[in-house]
Length: 104
Image (tube, rainbow, N blue to C red; front, side):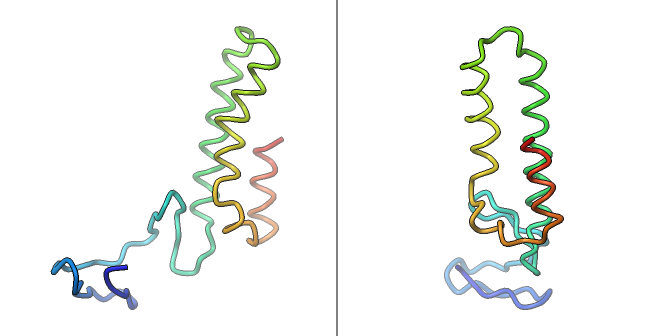
């Protein structure tokens, strides 16, 4: 980390010699974080992305056999849901229910 971000202050980075401005929310390694670590924005984006992928797969499902459809859903949807799920899985029941709703 180049510098500590405290509140809404701009902090001088000792390594890059540049001014850093805090952003809300921030994305790190594909996980969207807010200052309260609620992951609500991340979960919303994940659910939206998964629903979009499922909609696209549903439109072309007649073109594939059952095994290929399973492979598509596993690679495009489940992989997105499982990525970093151990980080945000301790969230509220409401957030978890949104993920489960998209999964079913």
